[in-house]
Length: 266
Image (cartoon, one colour):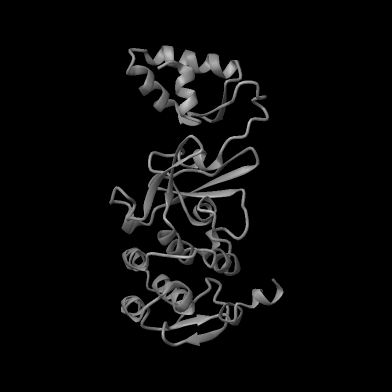
């Protein structure tokens, strides 16, 4: 495989991926490094960050070449997975478009910015770090000429309710999730329980309870969650925003969320 053939099938790639591909044809690492340097100088590549490259189409100014953020995010670590609002956006279910992309990884990493976009690592919860699939609900999809690793909508529903700051707050979360026509509710429940947070289970239960008809939620789904809900009242919002106690979930929910007040000004 010629270098240009590799570039044509790898719009975003790591240094190691290129070295491995060339090594299969007997090319040394030093020669591979020289090839990368040559193509960088020629404007065929741009360096996203150390060890990460994006290809540039012939005739495009490398300083103006668009680089796909979803493909960048899933190359920032071997297990990097688009998550939270970035996953909603990837699936076309985000109410607002962001230029901030959260990704899950077992590794410790620092955020960085590129082309006006920010990439923010989130360490996988301790309870989910051992399984190879980060606890489930992770898929690879063909996208933009490459592969993107992304959380499913089922996992994302739970994740944004578990960490609402990474989903954009309650209005953004509600409006985004309400754009999804169907969830596999058994997968939602299984992952929510696996995450091991009674508060998150209650948040998921409340959301599903509020959307019973639209999402075809059955009593068995809610019963399975209720068995893991908090024994004592908890606040829906991390800031302990006051509200009304929803006793079925032992959850103090702000009136604006119960009433979905943002719909009045939509």
